[in-house]
Length: 482
Image (cartoon, rainbow, N blue to C red; front, side, top):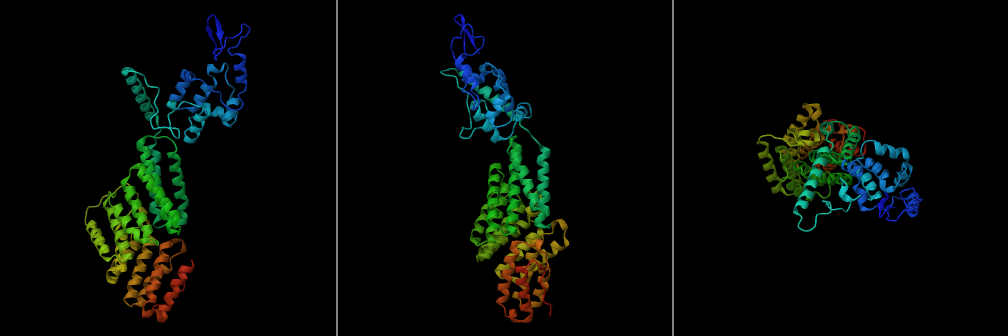
């Protein structure tokens, strides 16, 4: 604004105003004010001390701050909404909604507007890219300890006020947790095609909430849920044979677990990584991943899962002593008291129930060549899945357990028994098959080919049925049991 100085009025730039100039700006400043079509003008540091502007920024409302900026006395006269809207690349109506509506929560938009209006970083409630974690006001100089203490107190009070005003939505977080639990439980028995869209939608909802500033405890919960959603999508990607997408989802899950400081999710992520590597050509690294997961495991069920994966992975690469050592660890853990963690409480694919433990033991003993124990555990697993609650019936694991029974009977020379055990697997609808089933049936074909029974009519028909199962989603014609 113009000021009175030495008996006359001056412009904001310090130029003395002529007596016949009834306005508050000199000619040069009026010209500058009129030329505002491209960008905001450069303003002095004192510009930001205006109380209305300060209050708007303290309230974390960028829209109100823009309104206070437009009406600032420094401009001489209010800046029209359409001019400021043009700077922002938006419409006058949209700017009016920004100024008078709810505060913007989109961090990217907040950063864009802060840079456009060159708002001092110390007045912002968010951090600009490249800015240090702590933005300080100009500190008192010299030995002014009182001033320094006063500054520190204002900063602390400002932070506390902002923390109190952060949005918090326990009900929304609880709903997302319930939704992930529903999807995790449905995963083990429902066709993947019916769940994938829901998984993506749940993850997107969580990601959207994470884009707004929230209280630290809720942010931790949301990062846990985000990591869990990525973990479920990793399983889904692996089950449809997209190994690269599965690993990308798994990296995202681990990052979210790390940001949240959530050991239970870290343990499950490491175990899942080991599981994926076990079924890939990089199966040698699965043992180390499962071992690494044990230091994060926070429940009996998670520790059993990691020991089971480690045992089977070791057996798969011929490390027989390590496999048996891991089996002993698994069996010892099965005798301890049950507990749970945030991951296993979600259930479904994110749990490791008794039936799954039996399936893993059967599979591991089969890889070790102990076919009697393999058949015993595999039959027990299949029966548990078949007779247990429908919501806990994992068709994929049940089919893999039945293939272990087929392998055990082939090894024992019982071709009719192998045919009988394979019937439920070969009749499995295409939408209930997982990619690992192709790996398992290929192993069965190799085992069958190495036995004299492969040259019998029943053996040839079984081999043909296995091939047709791999090549087609249709139910193959089974050989009759003789």
